[in-house]
Image (cartoon, rainbow, N blue to C red; front, side, top):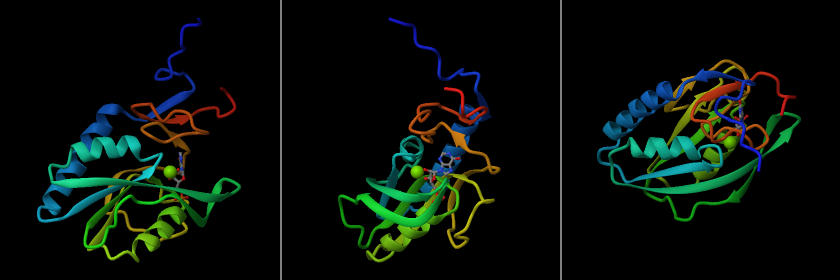
Length: 186
Ligand code: IMP
Ligand code: MG
């Protein structure tokens, strides 16, 4: 059997946010949420798959009584840009009527996916709905009305991977955020 090549020290990756930077920021967001929802009936809703790493860290930084749930959506891509057509692949397991919902997403790019998702969730009688996004890439934003209530980091218009974010399914397990230097290199 061949020895595995390290993915974490892959020379084709340029680290943009280190594990230490990320962990520090997520703890700050967790403390902010803890303070703001002291009397809430909180449901943290992760959008699969990209939010899984951020969600796991964020929820452990929030010292509140809460439940979690997940949704999976596919946004139809028109080339590399999402188009705004969103199909629900997996819906919530439980109703959110009367709940204080925090939607957790990996990155807001054009904003199409979240704009549509928030419209859908907005019809379900929640007490409040807020958005936590690990990364905000404002430059390509089309849906300017998408408001990020809890944002990890604002980044320039690069395609990034790691900490749950993927390129063709790969790199979600990196504990940091990186730019793929040459996307044509395997
Ligand atoms: P939006 O609808 O354009 O905001 O698309 C958001 C979705 O596109 C995210 O949930 C990601 O799945 C994906 N995405 C956008 N930018 C990146 C990136 O830089 N790296 C990895 N995935 C991205
Ligand atoms: Mg995603």
